[in-house]
Length: 284
Ligand SMILES: O=P(O)(O)OC[C@H]1O[C@H](O[C@H]2O[C@H](CO)[C@@H](O)[C@H](O)[C@H]2O)[C@H](O)[C@@H](O)[C@@H]1O
Image 1 (cartoon, rainbow, N blue to C red):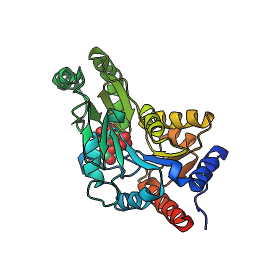
Image 2: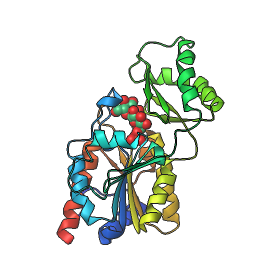
Image 3: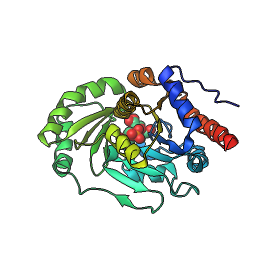
């Protein structure tokens, strides 16, 4: 038996071959929203695909490490993913806030630096700025403790409203020593100095990875894609997977274009994980 889903690039085929040949040396890392969890209107209502935690647990003993690398607070992703309740995920690592936070499945412990400077002042100033912009109804602010995310998904024209917000939020972020992280119908104001690429690179070094798979769907995942591309240039085989949308929402073009394999949303990611687990179990 072989993997039915075939990467479309030579680098991706080499990455998959390396993973299958030496799974104990492979680290598999996944974005959360849009990749393991279907996109929904209210961020608090997001949940991992019902098969995601079980599929990860099947892969855990067969591979060199599993991680979730997310813009969410680590504990939020653990809760919405059901990762702490899933037997077999003791080795899972959740890198939250783009790598600023780390949760270990083995201990259930969270490691997080002190609250970043600038976010408390931003929390005080953001409502006034939004009120002064005469925006349409439906803007939602998600307080992520270490950052604030301004969502436009519930407005009548999310992309147009995002454009209206872009410059004033960039100015406000800069005034507080923060940066703007763009995503699907969201602009997040967050501390600089971390990104998913650095988070993934650090984890791969720590695990002594000999191959990597990274799956993502949004602009925040491009830093991890760039890290895998850079590491491939240094001889570490890697497979980049894009989780495409399933709800009619257009895919994030740069993510789909740079991926070796595009699968249909979190259901497609879970199907790929199950296929990998079956293939690796049969070979072991
Ligand atoms: O790095 P991720 O795990 O992909 O997290 C990125 C952001 O995801 C969440 O927002 C996105 O998903 C929401 C729920 O499906 C959706 O309503 C929103 O439009 C998307 O942008 C989350 O709310 C953010 O905090 C994360 O940074």
